[in-house]
Length: 551
Image 1: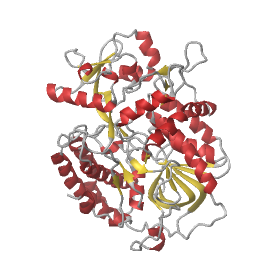
Image 2: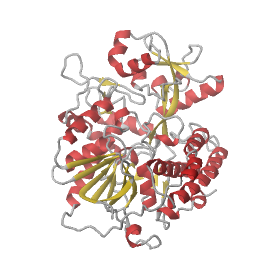
Image 3: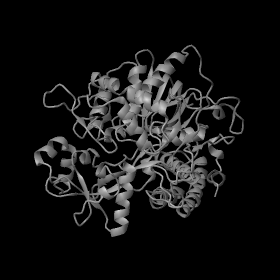
Image 4: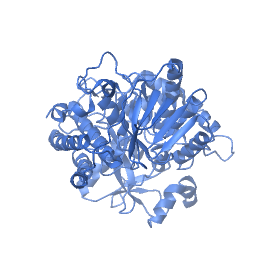
């Protein structure tokens, strides 16, 4: 029998959503936090921009709401937008109380506020251009010192524990499905353990790794979305992958993010001939919403055949650039790009998943005992396109909401069901894996080529057919072999890619981040979310990808 760990709260992920929740929950209960790598390795740690919140006297909640709704292209939930934005100042102050140090104005008292694309006022609270790293540092240090929080690094969730693990794969669910924790792979030992919890919070981040080019770290393989879908939770709007318009174009740059704040600080997008081109695409020029900027750059690249465009800040005093963007300046200098003297070569890359596991205003999913917060969740805040720097705020607000709701419902006297041990007696087939491991590269390339910034029905259907074949092969291999981290990531990448293609095929219009040349935005379609669910096929190994993709 494998080891069983029992806790009040199981947190899957160690970014801002997971750690802020853990700190709240641990005041009155036990918390286990599992993370695939070290605790600091998360999308939060890579966030350069900041947190959007109303602090300036020239700003207001109403203006922030209007900017969010405009970016979301008709798909934002107004009640969610009002809720999240209204909590902005309180969330920032709580981060500061936990130890986060944000950049101040010259007087040393007031917060320095930046501006990013889609914002009509300065409202970006930041720590130079390393905001995510500073937040992650503060939260990690606070968690390390808390006696009720236990962290499990190099542990990866395999699947959520639900009825089909208790009563058999072919049994039908009666009423709502329940979650009692997760089966978790300990990478060091290679064994799968049972983590039982009264409440499970999914905050495993996004899915940028389904694309060839991404700003996301290697851990962003869509694990939470894939697990929730396999367990029976509805997911929504996976067609809305936000492509960050400006990542460093360099053979050794590894899609290094050039923050939108650089454009907010006066950066100008130019082509290879030094011609600014964004004014022709939007009244806000280089500060237009990200989907517009990304499509404009994509069009420029296709028109010219050039490998990149350029972001020029050479007209801004060098000392100012070095002070405001020390991380970007340092990384570019390491690659022999002096941003104070030469334009920065940039290209778009997959950045943020605006869809995810559907939740209500309290972060609840359709599965009893399972909540979601952060990039893994679809709360309705972002709509068809996320407004810059709203995501860290959303994670803080919803993790707070999850704690408020879950702590009221937590029944610490209730026992746990008898969860069977994980079957890990299968042998890992190395020869087959050598062949199958190439599928990760192929899926990512299919998504980049066919489900990128500009799409068409032909490209989407081709991607659906080819990814569907790969998904079936991966699932068959998974069923008959010992699990590894690489196999689990491939399974999840393939699952989320297939679901993203299905969402894109279902949306018969162009809206926000989803631009299909065969479905122009003519205003005739009523805005609706694209919702997918396993439905009656609620057991993970029974997903029929040909039916699911409907091609």
